[in-house]
Image (cartoon, rainbow, N blue to C red):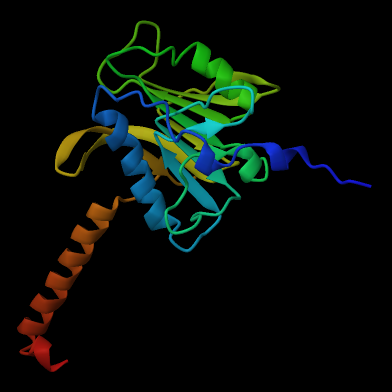
Length: 227
């Protein structure tokens, strides 16, 4: 008997467009998810079961075009796929694993982040849908909105720092500096509400620790080069 697997007939990531080719109209749409990705690469550096995509197409239905969030996080997948990495995120190539979180950064050109995209992500089954308006406050909207999927519908969570137990991370906003740019950013937090440091902050902290060590050695008359 012939064994037929319909998944074998679906296009692979190499055959599908990687994005919708819509240019961003604000660099924050790239910088904000890039900061989140950089922090994850630091705090989860010993984990290989996650992937954070930026402006990458997600294919979840062969009959529909890709959805392209500004950022998304998937758990339980390979972090790296081949030397060139993922070209796009295709559910039938990822054992059907749906992203746990999708992020949309509201830009100058409004793209239905609060309406149609919320419907699309709920249909896909994305557990947390995050919408952030970095440059302005929309009327009757929070600057940061985190929606939790419950029984097929999104429920808006309250607060500026939201703990997401299924992911093991919190997400929130506060003022800081990234790549020399000082403004409000999105950050990851632990269960106690403490913010995870950025790679830049960790590098500065380590440099300060080194300078403090050298100073203590000099006070004791010890040549650091002799150690």
